[in-house]
Image 1: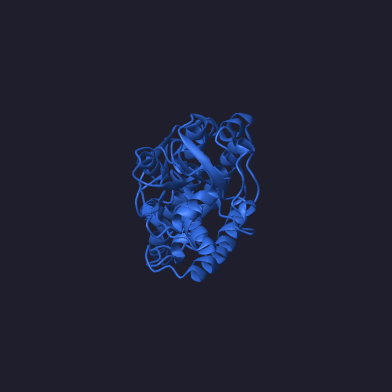
Image 2: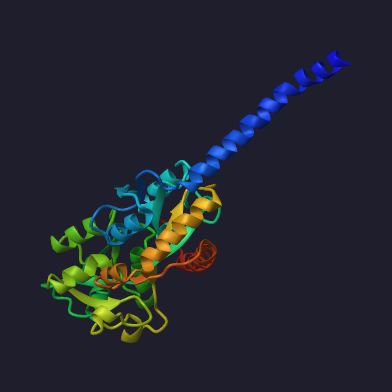
Length: 333
C-alpha cells in the first residue's frame, strides 16, 4: 500500500510542478500589471515632427507623464500616411509600454484607399481612448494672390494654371478634404503627398506648392504670425480661434465637411487591466485644465472616451469614409 501511494505521488509530481509553474507565471503577470507602469513609456506618432499629430502629442504628453508617473518618449515614425507606424505597433509587445497616437487617416481612411492596408483597424489594435477632434484649414501663403476660397477654385478651373495642394499624407483628412473640394467644384488640383504636416508647411512657405489643407496645430501658429492666409475651414461650423474664417460649406458648398481626430491605441492583446490604467491616465490628462488650455491654443478639442466608445467611433468612421472614397473613384494612393 505504501508503495502504491508513492507510485501515485511520483506520477503526479510532474503535473504538480506544471501547476506550480503556471500559477507562478500568472502571479508574475498579475504583479506586473499591478505595478504598471514601472518604466518609461513609448508613444509612436506616424508623422514627421512639426505636423498636427506630433504637435498634439507634445501638448498632451507633459501631463500624461505626470498621471502615469513615468516619462513618455515620443517616437516619430513617418511613412505611408501613418501606415508604417501602425504596422510597427501591431508587432510591438502587448505589455502596454508602447502606445500610439493614431489618426482618422490610419484608422478609417487608408484601409479604403487603393492598395489598402496590411492591418485591420477594427481587429488588429487594442483601443484605449479618443484623444482630440479638430478641423482642417485651407491655407495659402500670406503674399499669395489667392484671397478667398473662390479665388482658389477659379484658379483650379483655369486650364493654363497648375494648382497643387499638399497634405500630411495620402489618405489623410487633408488629402480627402482636397479631393472632396475638387469633386464638389469641378476644379483641378494636383495632390502632393508629404510625410507629415511639417514638411508640407515648409514647402508651402517656400512657394513650392499652391495651398495646404492643414491641421489646426500646424496652421494656427503660422496664421497668427502673419505667414499664412486662411481661406476656409473644413468643419461644419466655424472654429473659435478663427471665427472670421468661413467654412467651405457656407461659401457655396452646403454639406461639405471633413473632420479630423486623433486617438490612443495599443498593440493587439494588451491585458484589459493595463488598458484600463492607460484609459484612466489619458482621460484624466484630457480633462485636466492645463492640457485643455494647451490644446485650445491650436483649436484642438479634448475628446476622451472609453475603449468601447472608441471602437464604435472607428467602426462608424470606417463606414462613412468607405462610402465617400468609393464615390470619388480614386485610382491612386
